Length: 439
Ligand code: GDP
Ligand code: MG
Image (cartoon, rainbow, N blue to C red; front, side, top):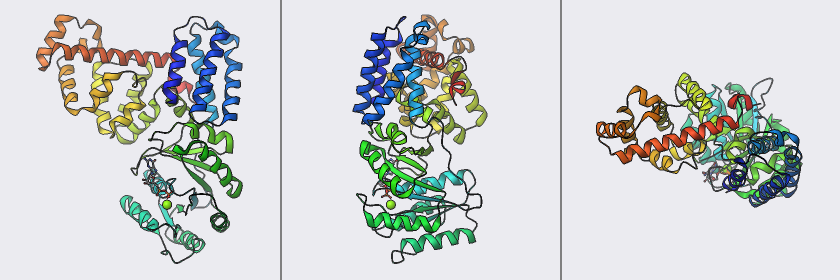
């Protein structure tokens, strides 16, 4: 994958005390190849490499004690810029309702994303109305109604005999009468862009004057996705993009090219079929994800929505400062367990890809119980200073927890790895930590 390829390039640089221009050139050649293979637009890659090189071959790198890290930081910064720099918020109408029109090819995820977006808006106490304007695809209306029922959001439909323009018009009226502050219009898509469809979308556009025209793009389709985005933009004046299916085996190219090619920001990212798998898109987090730094901020935000805010803040601080004890380890496991799909969450943790055993361990619930037993058998001092756990202490812990010394050893090793990763991560992000790096 793109992540693992880039991590390879950087692991060669990381340990180096001095980085020559030749090293930088070699690294950039590999980064270039990795990006092209990930299906990033050719011109985008070219500009990107030029920008990174310009900074990397400067003095800053030579003077630094950790030139490898400096280069990674430059790449991280430029990747973030490439995807828009900062998070792009949803527009809001001066006078409600805010009208959002969802457009895109068939199968991109418009209908599913409409439901997800409604759910996201509900979470911040809004009252969205879904409007079913896809009268062509069999069962498209039903699909939206099912989603609406699932989240208890109203769905406006006139069946499949009324024209989409009429449905949009009456839907908007319905929202005004019922005090819905957001209207999400789910439109039809085709397998390819065609004139009839564009005309219909333009008519709806003229009538409802949307505050947002969001193009829903399947990130698995790579370069094609970007071409589609360009043609939609020419016809409809998009205001933003939603990338779907980022949970899949995507090569990452669409995320990296779409903003540069269309000028339109990615506003949301969908990473699953479930109704709550839509998130605001944060370029900086996506960049760290691509670079294999993990996406701690996403994890923390998810945690904040689902668990205790104070605990989450404390967890974030500890991760940032790499002050991490066995108690935190347990606590974190307990919280992570409450958050849902463990696989997905583990992928967000920094360095988790490299800490092999940890990932396997966490997925197995029975193992979690054993880990808990081991940690509970440690003294307070042992939990905060794992380095004092010598052989006799380990033996005592194993006996106390009904496990074996081998298991205790394994856990301590995993914990150490994780701590190391966190230290590395926080030094990479600079003394101010993640918060300081965020714009
Ligand atoms: P539409 O034709 O654009 O309205 O697309 P749909 O909303 O009907 O979605 C097409 C298919 O993609 C459905 O099977 C969805 O469940 C699936 N899908 C949509 N978004 C995602 C996503 O983020 N991840 C995954 N894995 N599947 C998705
Ligand atoms: Mg649909």
